[in-house]
Length: 252
Ligand SMILES: Cc1cc2nc3c(=O)[nH]c(=O)nc-3n(C[C@H](O)[C@H](O)[C@H](O)COP(=O)(O)O)c2cc1C
Ligand code: SF4
Ligand code: SF4
Image 1 (cartoon, protein in one colour):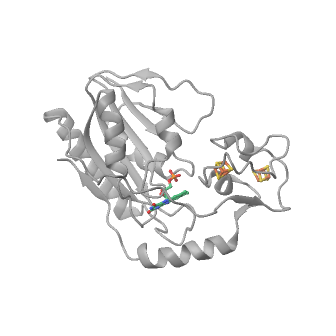
Image 2 (tube, rainbow, N blue to C red):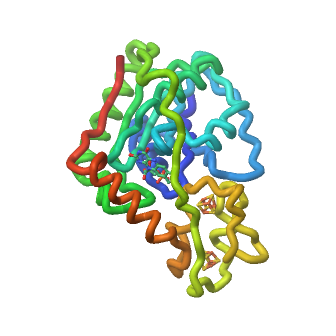
Image 3 (cartoon, rainbow, N blue to C red):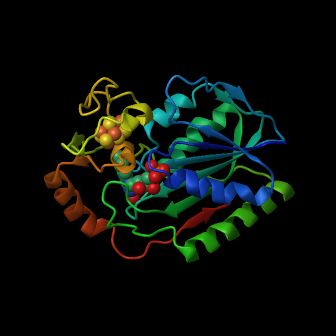
């Protein structure tokens, strides 16, 4: 038996929540980082394995690059747990999209967990989450999932609607200020090689998936999104992403 965590987590929240849920098994968790470039992701999991898939909601959808990197993975009636982190707006049809993708590949989706996290574009939404109460709740979810998989594994019913929410995003492309010291960290860590190693002040916009990783990891805080675009997103989120939203566990 192996416990696997496959995470696509540009700014770290999905990985964090995934680790929290997977550690319930008290076994070493084998992590597969789905943001790596030039990595051989093909793998077949066994029925005795348990796979956690942790991704952020991007426009209420599974990030397309995460799905691309999961293309060659297979299960053999392998229990799967879906984890969606989201910045206090919504996760829309993410679970249905991921379940539709994984079930035909041999995974049995036993559970889905939606976890509210800080919004990776505008941190004023979902600020400080998961907080202590969230962590206690996620630990409780983890135990319930473990009990179900040990006692009576079964596919949950579909969560979401078709057609899936259409993916729409505004222009949140990262720009670079003079604070850049050319350390090249962002170029090394960009999941799509959108930042040229020779000149990390540039961004190849056609390749950028707006994942915000470069902005979060830059030690000089030299990368940023145009403040006008941020202000307009903030305005929109004021209407749809305020107030306390609950984490959710789906087991049936
Ligand atoms: C391009 C993009 C789109 C996003 N879309 C949504 C969304 O539809 N709903 C939401 O609540 N949060 C949204 N967020 C916020 C992220 O889902 C949230 O911050 C997530 O925890 C980031 O995960 P990570 O830290 O693993 O990268 C979006 C963030 C980005 C960068
Ligand atoms: S991480 Fe920041 S300082 Fe380093 S190269 Fe990128 S933008 Fe410049
Ligand atoms: S350049 Fe784009 S794709 Fe690359 S890390 Fe930055 S936001 Fe993500």
